[in-house]
Image (cartoon, rainbow, N blue to C red):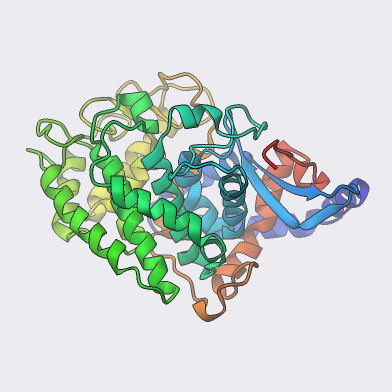
Length: 435
C-alpha cells in the first residue's frame, strides 16, 4: 500500500544514507583518480540525472499491481528521448544498469505494440512529459539514423556491463530490422536531423552522425557473436564503412563536419563508442588526429562541437576526452568543462548546451536536462561484465561484481528520485494510450 511504501522509505533512512555516503565516497575516489576537476563534474551530475526518471508499475483490470511489469520513464519535456537516453547511459551503467534496461522497455514496447511499419527507432514516446502518447512529431521529423544508432549502442553498452542478452534475444526481429536500417543508411546519412543539428545547424552527410551509425552496426554484429550467431555480414559492412568514412570525412584539419567540406571540422565525439564498446573499427591514427584538433580549438569554456558553431555540451566534451589519445589533452577538455561549471555566466541548473566562448546558455529550454550523465563516460570506458553469457537469457539483472555496484547505488538513486517525486514509492502509473 501507499502507507507501507512511505513507512518503508522512512524506516530505511539510516541504511539508505549509509549506502549513499558509501557510494559518494567510492565515486569521489574513482573520479579523482582521473582528476579533481573530473570528480566535480560527476558529483554534480548525479542528482540532476537521477531526478528525471520515474519508476512505474502497471495495474491489471482488477486494480492490482503487476510487479513483473516495471518500466522507467525519463522526461524533461519529451518522454524517453533516445538522444538523452544515449547521452545519460554512462551514468546508468555506472550506478545501476537495471534502470537503463527498464528505461529501454517502453520504447521497445511501443515498436512492438503500436504496429508501426517504420524500419528505424522513433525519437521519443511523446512531446510532453509525462504523456507517453506516442512519437507523433518525431515520426514527422525523424532523427532516424541518430535514434536507431542510439538504441543499438545503448543496448550494446547494457549487455557489455551486465552480460544479460535477454533484451535483444526477446526482441530479435526488431533489432534485426534496425540493424538493416543502419546497414542501408549509416555511411551516407543524407539530410537527417540530429539533436546537435537543431542547435548548431544540420549539414548533409553529417560525419559525426555517420560515425554513430557505423559503430552501432558493428556493435550489433558483436552482439550476434556473443549470442553464438553469425554477424559477419554486418561486421564486414561496418568495417568497410569505417574505412570509407575516413576518406569521405577527410579534411585539412581533423575530420570534416560533413563529407566534402574539407575546410570544416567536427569533434566527432561519437568515436567514443568505438573505444567504449571495443568495436575496433578505427586505427590509432584517427584518435591521434582528433587529439591534435582538440588541443588546437579550445575556447574559454570548452571545446565547441565543430567549426560551424561556438556551442558545446559538457557531456559530449567528456565523450571527446575519452577519444583523446593522451592524458594532457584529456585533462585540458575536462578542465574547460569544469571551468564553465565553476566560473560560467549562468545562474541556472546545468544546461545541456552552452556557448563555449561566452560561458552561458544561449538556447531556450536546455537547463536541467539528464543528458549531463554523459560526463560519467570516463568511468565506464573500461568497465566490463564478469557475467558468463551462458546464463544471460534470464529477464533479471546481472550477477557478479557489477551487480553489487548496482545494488550498492540503488538507494542513492532512490533518494534522489524521492526528493523530486513520490512516484518511486507510491507506484503511480504512467498509462500511455498505446498500451
